[in-house]
Each structure stands twice: as C-alpha cells, then as structure tokens.
Amino acid sequence: MAKRVRGLDVGTMNLAGAVQDDKGNIKIKLMRHCFLDIDVNPFTKKMLLQQKVQYVELGKKVYVLGESAFELANIMNKVIRRPMKAGVMSPDEADAAPIFGLLVEAVIGKAEEPNTPCYYSVPANPIDADFNIVYHSGIIAGALKNLGYVGKEMNEGHAVVFSELAEQDFTGIGISFGGGMVNVCVAYKTIPAVAFSTSRSGDWIDKNVANVLGINQTRAAAIKEKGVDLKNPKTREHEAIGIYYRNLINYTITNIKAKFESAESVPQFPDPVDIVCSGGTSLIGGFVDVFEEELKKVDFPIPINKVRLAEEPLNATAKGCLLAALNDAEMEQEQQESEAKPKKNTK
Ligand SMILES: Nc1ncnc2c1ncn2[C@@H]1O[C@H](COP(=O)(O)OP(=O)(O)OP(=O)(O)O)[C@@H](O)[C@H]1O
Ligand SMILES: [Mg+2]
Image (cartoon, rainbow, N blue to C red; front, side, top):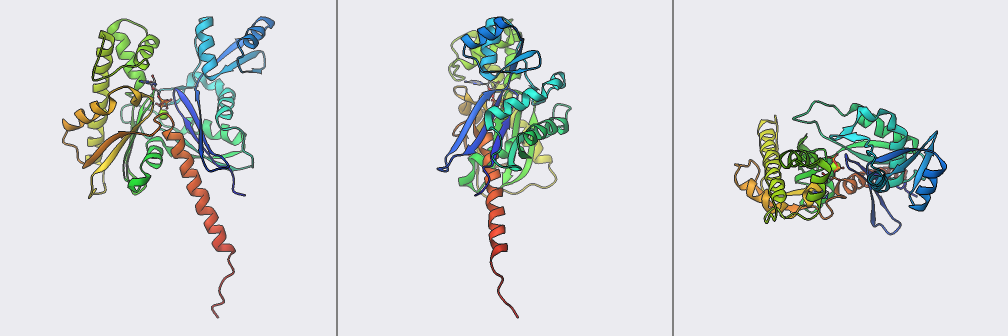
C-alpha cells in the first residue's frame, strides 16, 4: 500500500496538517501555533485536569499546547509563547524545539511507516526584511524526521497555487495573507515565475491600528477578527483597520507589479488569469472588493480574469502541500509500475 503522505503549513499564528483519509477525502487539522509553560505542582495539575486541558510534562514543566494555552494564558495573566515570529522560527524561542515537535505531532501525528514524505510550507525570499529560511527550515525538517517523515520544502504561495488553481492548469497568482507575512507566487503551468514574501500582513495591521488608537495589539487583533466590513466601517476602530488594510493590499499589488516587471524572464500570459487570496487576513469582510478597487488603480502587467478567495482560506496552504506530496507519490508509483513491467524482447 502507498505511504500516507502529509502536508504541513507552518505559520506564525497557526499550524495546519493535511492528510487523505481512506475514502480519499482531504482532512485538515488546524491548531494555534503557541504554548504555555507552567511549573509543575499539585495545584496546577489539578487546575489543568479541571479545565480539561491537554498538556504534556517535560522535566519540571508542564506544557499546554495550542488554543488551550491561549485561553489559559488569559486566565492566568501570563504571556503566551510562540515558536515563530514574523514568518520564521524565532531565535528567542530556540529552546522550544521539542515543544514545536509536539505541536507538529498534534496536527499530523506520527508517520505510519518510516520515511513517509511530508511537504511543509516555507516563506519565499522576503523583499523588505533581512532573513533567510535556513534555520527555520532545518528546525521543521528535524521535527518531521523525529516523527518518521522526510520533510520537503514548498513555498507558501506555490502551495496556494497547487490548492486553488487546478482548474486553471495551475496558472495564475496565489497569495497567502498570513499573520507574519504575505506570500505571493505567480505561476505558469505549475512553475513559479515570480515568488516573494513581504512582512506587512495581519500583525502589521494590528501593530499600526494599536498605535493610532492607543490600545494594545491583542485588543486591536480581537476587534479586527470580530466581524469588520471594510466597505462599511461602523466605528473609528473599523475605519482605522480599513485604512491599513487598503495600504497593505496596495503594497502587495505594487510589489507584484515591480517584481514581475524586473524579473529576468517571465512568461507571457495569453489569457487573463485568476488571483486567489488565502490566509487568515483575507477573511475580513469586503477583502476582495478592496483588492479589486486597488488593482484598478495600478497598471498591472498581467491580464486578470477574477480576484477570488480560496475555498477555505485558512487551509489552502496545508492542502496545497498535501496535493504536492500526493502528486509525487503518484509519479513514483507510475515509475515503479513501468519498471516492473516485463520488457519487450527487441532482439
Ligand atoms: N476573521 C478574521 N478577520 C481578519 N483577520 C483575521 C480573521 N481571522 C484571523 N485573522 C488574522 O489572520 C492572521 C493569521 O492568518 P494565518 O493563520 O493564515 O497566518 P499564518 O499562516 O499562521 O502566518 P504566516 O503565514 O504569516 O506565517 C492573523 O493576523 C489573524 O489576526
Ligand atoms: Mg501562512
């Protein structure tokens, strides 16, 4: 039987794991990418049991993972720990590697067979920040190896193309608007022509909204996630969120244009293509309308048919990673079958 391959989206705010079940349906497990460490004592353990919180014990600490950690941090007035910052593994959390492994296990489980392939998302090269993904990718590959997988990198924007543009022959523009960054991939028949990331996304909006309104960033994020319509702002807070959203979308479009025009060789798109937006930041009301309005203001170098949201914006990257892994497995199987066929005697 074929190995049960996986897709894994490693995001600043969320982790998502994808696998195909026995009936061929794609199943996604989403988890908040954070944890909380608490000193072990009989009181804390009793409290965790009462709250029905899932936790693991490592050394003298208890680690609460995911959404529960987030809720508990609020109750205990503690600061949540996040393995990633601004799109990559945070050096401040370098000792969190074993916990990262547990979080990954919670969304994709252990491999049933050794060396099962798992594609995982990584950001494309940033245009406005100074980092590379070598350390980041190494930590993920190491965690996957410990769980029995062979990790394979995939650009986040490319994963969106795989997930959402199958009917367009994998030709078009896939964008993930995440928490830490925006990832863009312009693809022609599956091949990425231009791929890059920027560091203006959800966290950037929260930081700026918090600044102008004199509130903290967590509060700004909560207001933003609680049902804002960019086309119909109801409060001063909503208005501020709208202003930064418009700026973020314009910045993204302008950068795609600049990157595409300055790339050494780019494909000619004979027919208009779709732009597919995914990621948590694209969930806000009116996102596509504002995107279309901003697109009209720019002399965009690629003919566009339609701007649309991914089918499931939070799951698109994990799904794309899984589809890439399934595609590889299928090709490998076809190759094995053709090698196993008795060769015709050509003498
Ligand atoms: N309903 C909503 N409206 C607006 N923003 C939202 C909503 N729900 C979540 N978000 C925002 O989406 C972002 C997280 O999105 P996502 O899970 O796609 O990011 P990520 O993959 O973890 O991060 P990255 O890809 O940047 O590393 C956060 O900024 C969050 O505030
Ligand atoms: Mg993401």
